[in-house]
Length: 111
Length: 214
Image (cartoon, rainbow over all chains, first blue to last red; front, side):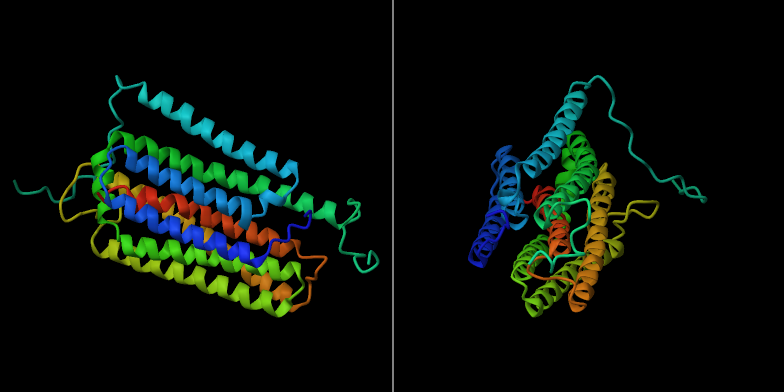
C-alpha cells in the first residue's frame, strides 16, 4: 500500500459522503438549536475536512512521518485558537476595541 | 526498471519511493504554514464574532446561501476530479490525466465566477467596507463582518487562482510526457494543494454562510 493506490470507487464514495454532509449541514443550519447549531456545523466541517485529508490527500496511506507533520500542524492551530480565546474571554473588563468609522465628510451633514 | 528512472531520482535519494515521501512531507510542511495563515484569520473571526454576535448573525443572513452551497458543491466536485487525476497519473493514463485536470480547472473557474458574481452584488449594495459602506439597514459593527468576509473569501479566491495556475503547469508537463507510472509526484503535490484549498472552503462555508440562517 506504500504506493497509495486507492480504488476509484472509494473516491466516488468519499465524494458522495461529502455532498451528503454538505446537504445535512445546510438543513441543520435552518433549525434553531441555540449553541448546538455551531457545534453541529463545526463538527460536520471537521468530519468533511478529515475525509478529504485521509482519503483525497492520501494521508491514511502515507508514512508515519507524514502523520506527525499533519497532526502537529493542526494541534498547533488548536493551541493558538484555545489560548488566544482564553485571553479574550477572560478580559471582559477591557472595553472592546472601537470599530473603524468613516471619517466625517468634507461637507458637514445638515442637522 | 531502475535504469528507466535514471535522471528522475535526484542524487540525494536512494530511490523513487524515498524521493516521493520527501516531497510529500515537504508539501505538508508548506501546507501547515498555510493552515497557520488561515488560522490567524479564523482566530480574528472568532474574536470579533464573540464580541459582536448580532452583527455577524445579520451579516451572515444577508449572504446568498444558494450561491454558497453551489460553490461548496463545485469545490467538492473539483476535489473529486483532482483525486481521480492523481489516480490516473499513478496508472500512467496520460489522456485521462489531461481530461481530469481540465475538469478540475473548469470547476475551479466556475467557483471563481460565482464568487465574482457575489462580489458584484455586494459592490452594488454598498457593502464593501470603507468610506462608502452603506447597508440598507444600519447594524452596528456590520462592517467588521464584511471586512472579514472579504479578507477570508478573497485570500481563499487568491489561492484558487494560484491553484488553477499550478494545474495549467501540470497540463503542460503532462502534454510534454513528463509523467509516468513511476514518476507522478508533481501531480500528486499539486493535488495536495488543491485539496487544501477545498478544506479551507469547507470551514468558510458554515462560518460565513450558515451561522445566521435560523
